[in-house]
Amino acid sequence: MELYDLFYKWVPVYIKLPVLFILIFGILVCNGIFLGNTNDIFSDLGVYTEPYTQAYNAMYIGMGIGLIAHVRLKMRFSNKQLLMTGLLCMLLMNVICATTSNTLLTIAACLVLGFTKIWALVEVYVIWLMVWSKKFDTSRLYPFVYFTALGGLYLMTWFNTQLTYRYNWRYSYIAVIILLLVCILLAIIFVENHPLKRKVPLYQFDYIGIILLASSMMLLDYAIVNGKVEDWWASNKIVAAFWGSVFTFLLFMRRELTIKHPFFDFALFKRGKFRSGLLYFIFLGIVLPGTLQSTFTAGILHYESIRNVELNLYLIPGILAGCMLCFFWYYNGFDPEILIFGGFLCFVVYHIIMYNSFANDFNINDFWLPLTIKGFGTALLYVAIGLHTTRGLPIAGAMGAAGAMIVVRSFLGSGIFAALYGYFVYDERVKHFDYLAGQLDAGNHIVAMGGAATSYRALQQQATLAAAKQLSGWIIIAGIIIMAIVLTKYIFIKLKNKADAQVIG
Image 1 (cartoon, rainbow, N blue to C red):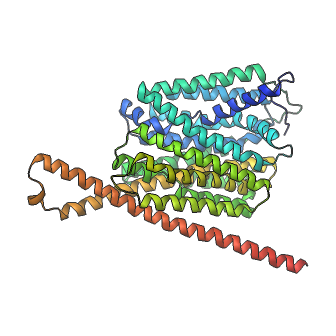
Image 2: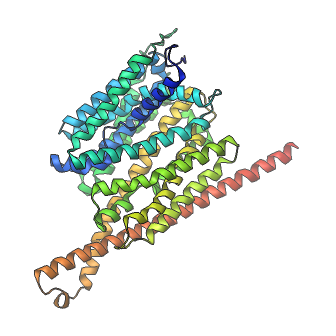
Image 3: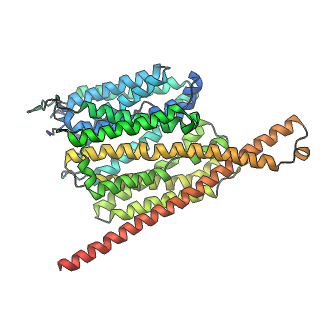
């Protein structure tokens, strides 16, 4: 794999760094779907919200698959070709998302956007890695990248929601398109094209493997997102999508284990750190989803979508503090397992605070402490688990591991649990409502239609509170179990290393 500087030699450093920051910020935050304004989109178009959740997941599926495939593309196309093609495809896909009313087209556009976003992202990522570490030490770069990705995404979502609230949801895409046009213009002016000395042809590229993996993930995406709407296993579509996902994934595994040039190297699973890293991201998916918070703010406090997005700004100081801690932690060579334990501890504390805060008098300013803690824990886990999963691998192996990591972290983990939590809250709310309604003495409490309406709203609110607290309690228990697993693993490794050292001594 040939690596070159991204810029012309005449470009001074004081221009390079701002251009690099604008490029990585634009590439990371310009998604096809922003969850803050999806309510306005599906309300305006008269469709269900589920296709937009599918599209959001599809983008991360595309990013994961694109990162695995990028190793071969990097050996065929030059840096400027990949950067420009990635930015142009992102621009085109955002234009499609902004103008179409066809939800299937939106989902397909987000899948393509995620796949092609990687082409541009890797080129900028490599140069930032050179800036932060001459020895290509990713522990120096990860905190910066994740602060830019997480903090920038929350900030961009808030900005787009403001545009949607004041004008129309299509204006938010205009802002995204303008940012991408600026990135394209900067790339045209400052980025030099370095032709490859040796191009590797793509005729042995595993196109069928990519199609099988993408099909499997997209079928699973459909099944988990639409389960609540179509009543899970009572729906033939959900059953067919689930088993279709299993079947296509088995075909993908069989193909990758038998062909000469596989798309994904399953030998990665022989590495203990890779396996445990993916497991940690599954654990993160248990505690990360904001289903409870959105249920609380929308169903009980009755916040508008713009207020819900504003709450996420409280995450940014925590993310900044967490990324700074990670930088100095790895710089001083401290044990990364402690960061992972600390990250899960932050999520348990966050859920305990929220559990005790489920009440009608909770003020918007009261969210700052739990959300800052959540942001801090998110930064710790994203950085620490990401480095745990990919460190020590060659470039090709690191890209494959990072691609699998994105799919597990952003889809198989949080995406699946978010869908399950949404269904659990809905189902338990109905049960609690039936129970509370059965306890209500209609003759004493309902004296008029106004009284009936008031009682109904009060019952709905109490049922939502009960369901949210019940789920929150289960998540706290799961978080404590996860912390025990991480701590046990850490102690076991320490004792094993100590015993090995005594044997060698």
